[in-house]
Length: 401
Figure 1 (cartoon, one colour):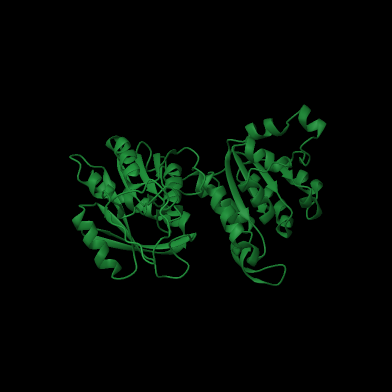
Figure 2 (cartoon, one colour):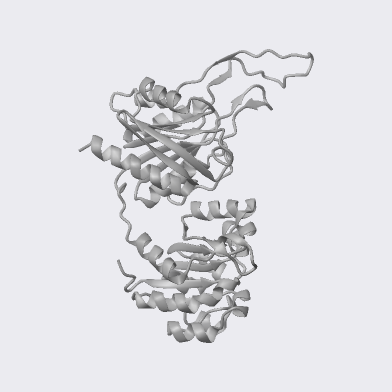
């Protein structure tokens, strides 16, 4: 698919890769796109307005408060005009602003004001890319609905070698064309997704819980929306922004999560249980804070409801996908859960693998169904979520064909 007729606002930030943007504009216009360029103040040190105006055929915008721009196509009008907001290169500083809703220049204001599809091509030093704040910001802007292209891995201008290079202009255009032409195989489907941990109270100030961050479930919700699904996200106590377009129900305990799920699941086509639900809760919750009066403390626990098994046991259940986070005998435990709970599919991960699983932005899954399995290798959770959803849709279609 070409970009013919697509209105693209290209936002350029102050990274060395900005020198490649005149070529990027040429390649976008060669595919039929209409391109208008926005430069941040720091970007003007790396590429000239004149060169970008020459290749785009339109004046370049730089100032949020430019009186002439406001008279013609100000930031709100430009935000409404765009079909695509492409930010390339996107520096670590700009990503931090986007992730936190800071609008202190024309480009970041456009990001907040537009309903266009946002595409981001990061470019920065490899250590800056790997830094935890940057990865958190990347995760957040993706949850806002932005699509990430790159970065590439290789030698950088500073002499370091590693991930962080902006993709070459040709690769950015190809990725953009692939993205806008993608199908929406989940259009018309309703998904209920659980995510995060549960908290089971012991007294007014204490609870038991687990290390689940909710990132996998939120990534699945984000990608399901991109594939056209209607998504209800039942979330335990996590500090993650709601994917744009999802309906979110916040819960604390397993009982609350069960109630929320059962209120939604009757009208759903697919149920994906990524939440790490506590297996047990205290048999009695103390009315007052438990005091430290002895060297030992004995508590009695009772089983929590099995939400996934309850849903799978309904007279007309949705397509049920479970998750199994295991520290040993991963395949055996996963297949046992698949059979015992009468699931359609289960995705298992080995929590002992370094850098994957709980609180990480990456994971790997071994997915099982009744007569087959597929291993999904280590990758960012957003990409893993897409691969898993494509697999779920494939099995769902086979079951309903």
